[in-house]
Length: 127
Image (cartoon, rainbow, N blue to C red):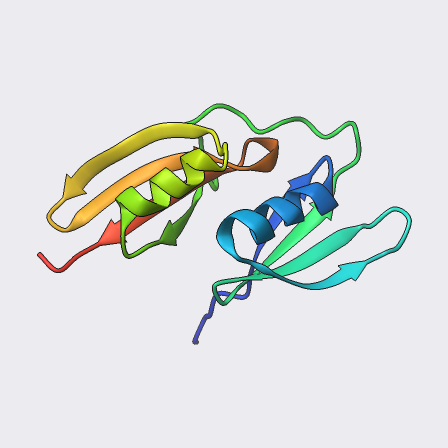
C-alpha cells in the first residue's frame, strides 16, 4: 500500500481572513472557495500542500495549549531561517519561540497563525 499526503485541514472562526494570512504571509495560492455567503471552505496551495480552511461554527472550542496530543503543528521549510523570522516579525506574526538549534543542521522556530495554529519554521542544512 502506498500513502501520499493529500491535504491539511484547518478550522477557523474566519476562514477567509485565515486564508488571506497564509496567502500574504507564506505565498500560498487560493485555489477555490466553497459556498458564497458565508464561505464554507477556502482551499489553498501552500508550497504544494493542499490546505483546506473550513469555516467553524461559533461553538467550536479554541485550540488547546501545547504540547498536546494529536496534531500539534505543521512545519514550513526555508533556506534562511534568520531572514524568514525577520520577515515574519516585520509582518507582525506572533513569534512563540525564537530560533533554536535542534541538532546538526537543523534550526527551528515557531510562529502563531490564525486561531492559534502553531507553525514551525525550519532550516535544514547538510551536517
